[in-house]
Length: 215
Image (cartoon, rainbow, N blue to C red; front, side):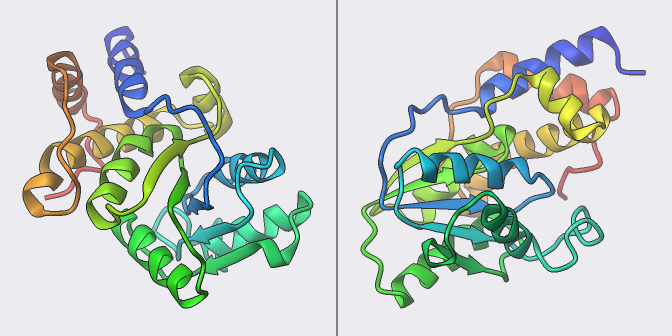
């Protein structure tokens, strides 16, 4: 049973992790692989709205997606996009990335190999991964302008779409921890973290939402 305080704290993290960027036309959209096919749907929507001429789907598998997406996250995303009417020629697949840093660096290498001129990137990911994706991209690919996007859902609607509130909160707690510790490891640029967000993170850790923390 998730306490009322944990719900309040989780909502605070949810709001913090979203960058609230206004989507605008970019050179390419990069859909970051995950367990959530909604990311593929959001990427397709942006393509159909004319925001990008090209999509890169990136991602191998993880313990979370191995059974759900056995052919790899990027491959399943591409298949979903084909079902939704995106032509094959408008997509590239990067099937090897296993973390956000590799999502960015491997996609960058793929686009360079394909001789695609990139000045701006529309990063599409889960709503609670926007800030970390942004901070990672600015660290690894500082030459491009980065705009973040994600499925447009409230926290409660997102939890309902996934069907497991505990897992969503665990993942948000893990994403918050990475924002706090990864700058010192050279993985991301630093992000300002309000005291209230830190307090909410600490309370959620004490409440047991720790399965996605890193050592």
